[in-house]
Image (tube, rainbow over all chains, first blue to last red; front, side, top):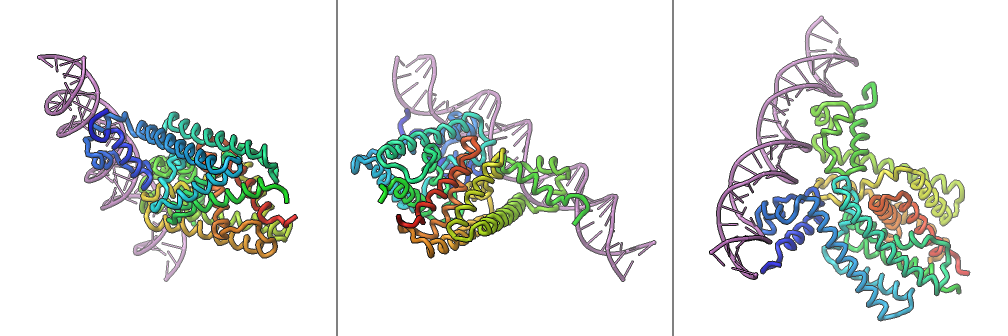
Length: 204
Length: 204
DNA sequence: GGCGTTACTGGACTCGCAGTACAGTTGGGA
DNA sequence: TCCCAACTGTACTGCGAGTCCAGTAACGCC
């Protein structure tokens, strides 16, 4: 909209970095405006309150994450159009991506908001919920495709399996943050991949 | 120490309930003292500041969690002393336990603190780290025992596999909170169990 | 029966941060 | 030329954390 890097975007960038580093509550509007080089009034011109900021951050984050998954698995399918191998390649690429981020993944805003949910209004919580349900649907569809070709070697709940991708990423990121290591999420994804390999392997 | 339910314990109980419900930052000392029916001065008599409270909560939580794992897997071993089956039985019992909590698990304080870590001092963070490392060690030992008997059908990092238990529980709890469902953690554990079953199944 | 210690109460105060309000400024477009 | 979006700047309210401290009630013990 404006000339230089859109102020609203700049606010979101600064806020995201800070929130991922120290949490939402610990991020003051003071430091956001300092970082974005605007006045307090300027901040409230763009966002009614911190809740509105949270909502905008989540919306942007979810969009980016979805685009990333789209691109990743599209590329994987290009490389091998067998549904199982698309999944395995995609997960490997995801694991590598996470491992390549030296300062760790922009640790999932989802978990961060989930654990402080009474702080946020219904809109923010619902956004969060819908994002996870979206990922469930996305991965469930992929697993259905796989199961149609490779009979699973154990009876499983496909919704839960769909959730497992998000769960493993979130869980890995929690460990990563708590341990201050940087490859836990990546390793956990590789274990999920190992599971899928075994689960859908043709009987020998 | 005192006659009625120890004030310190009462503070921790009230605080834990509130923190699990709405997060640490959103829990005010005001409401803790109201709940525990003491004065503000009384709170600060027991805890120097909110950090000291966080530390005490974490210590207590980790102790309880460890005792629970001890008991669960001891019982599982009683039922079947084959290491793989001890693990499978223990996980099943853990999953059932999580599913039986109608209001959900006392959602992991670990994740909650991990995502707000700049808020807490080194002591709290280190406590968190040590707890997760402890669980890694515990489960890694169990997996080593299993691997000595059943050759794994995929090459895996045993530390990462040890972490997978914590990761799956944490990840499941994040989903549970965000989705406001109540069996995600339990389902994720059952998927981990399915993985271990396949990973260590004798070749057919 | 006085003495110290533990476990508080209660009030007053400082400080930082969220949020409100609003008046004024600046730099394009129509 | 005037309007409007995108701000700046200041001043104020209110809440919660944390500090300080004086007082007090119950006890254990010498």
